[in-house]
Image (cartoon, rainbow, N blue to C red; front, top):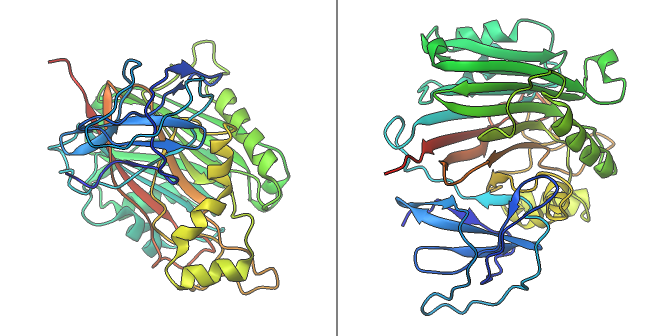
Length: 388
């Protein structure tokens, strides 16, 4: 059995599957344990997963209760669950490019801290280029032609398919040469959120690209939300505002929900309930997984405030903020900020019976040191499930 699958941070089993839609329109379901299924509870709701071709995939099925042979399954209350929170997905590196999937996407998010490095961007792009699309979300990007630098790094084997830019918040999609014919529709939008960051090119808000590529409708959102640990409510409100505002201005907006929605960016959610030195001690001992329970983003999602029904890879890498520029040492300024996973990549599959996702990797790029943030990369492969 492959190691790829849904993994829960609390790992409480349950036995009842309940279907319900909350105000966001996402189905809420509870897991069950049957042969070929792995079932865990996440916060106040659960999600069901099914083993398919060696990997686990999100699966929405009919309501039923089951008890697999030899399993000690605890019962869940049969009252309707209000939300799912963020489901954690293990990476599955067994996916073979262009064989096991219909579309492989390299996703990158990076807060550049106003600095540009040709070498760093080339490292982010990579040399193997084993993907159909490269989606690059940038925050605090410097002035200059970032698209041209990326195009140079891609050595003319890929071309720019679309971009959406709002000052320092930027988003680029590249595809192979002659792939423009595979695009059925492409729209761009942007939505600023409060503050005066534009004065110092620290714009807050989101830019987005909606695209139908190889018949799969997708929306990619690069965002930069409000900073500081105490601004949790403000970040939540910005997420909700951006979600409702993007592609809503046109008379004929981009069809929503898309089959695949990806948020990538400096979401700015911090660790709470732990001081900077205890957090750093755990990181130094390679025990940073113990900090996951302190993550604001996961807490707020569990409460149903944001990103309900989204998925994310396991946080196996160290917190990506805040570093001393030019090093891999955490902040030694007078603020000595608590290290945090501010930089994230989240995705949602609207209908898991239609598209099967495989997450090949989810990692930070620690060798890049030109910013106070470490970039984060994910490799997401999609398989269209066709009727037999």
